[in-house]
Length: 248
Image 1 (cartoon, helix red, strand yellow):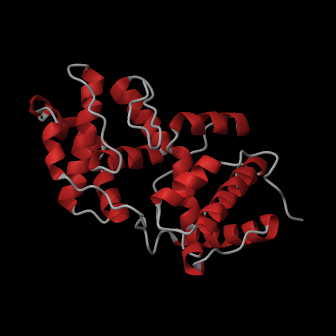
Image 2 (tube, rainbow, N blue to C red):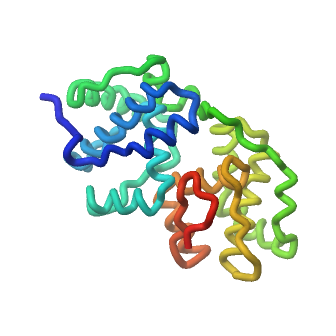
């Protein structure tokens, strides 16, 4: 019997709209991706211990939900009583098996089929991990000059270790060069350092810029992001999609 997530999970229209605006996909696929996410949340509520893996486009929709960090936290607490983690993926054979089982579950329990480009819905991002963005990333490396050089000696001792996983993620997801990815992390880390010591003002990374995509990829690793913000800032740092001001 097919289940329905209609009465238990919000419709997530804002996620659908942001997904379509950000990624080069059809409106139909943005609608379908949100249906997958709503069904995923409903299934996790009913069977919290089950490993459920979303197809890549639906995972992008989950990303957009997570990037409203305060809203995601509130939704999860209301739905599950805790914040549902999203982690940096690993490509393991047993995860591929779990993905195949998840797709069967989505079809049999929720009536979800494949979208406009079926091959996209049969990939969880391991074979083609890059985002298919509608608007390319702004690769303005000159923005790295905004980082206060007085703090540069702190980066190798602390931030380079803290974010050692992040440059490779940016290379993989955004097709950046190693230099661009390192610059992106340095911009973001410089802003965190500014916020932490209060010696100068956080310069909010612009939407679509290198520093912003580093911030967003950090935020997607939900548990680690919360722990890192607590470690560096002593509090949460909320991110709001498409917002050009910092949420204090």
